[in-house]
Length: 82
Image 1 (cartoon, rainbow, N blue to C red):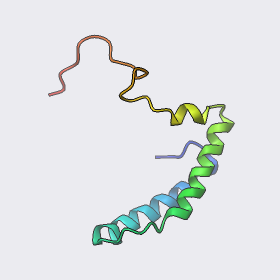
Image 2 (cartoon, one colour; image 1 turned 120 degrees about the vertical axis):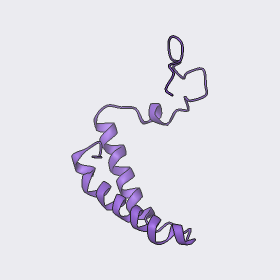
Image 3 (cartoon, rainbow, N blue to C red; image 1 turned 90 degrees about the horizontal axis):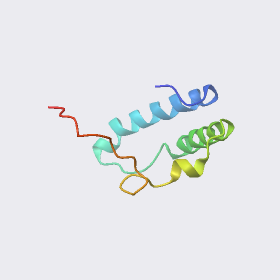
């Protein structure tokens, strides 16, 4: 999956690679440290900048909606997915 912005794509790939390696080689073996925190913060900042440049309010993204009266409810009867 691509990032929200082309400028963030290299950082996303770097973080994805770090996370996948950490998960497989460390987390599953009991290590709980966060060795990818630095690259995650860089990627997160890049994404926040890209979101702001697109005119999207970060406040709206961070607002709790699920499980509140603001959550959009499906219209009509629920569909059977089985």
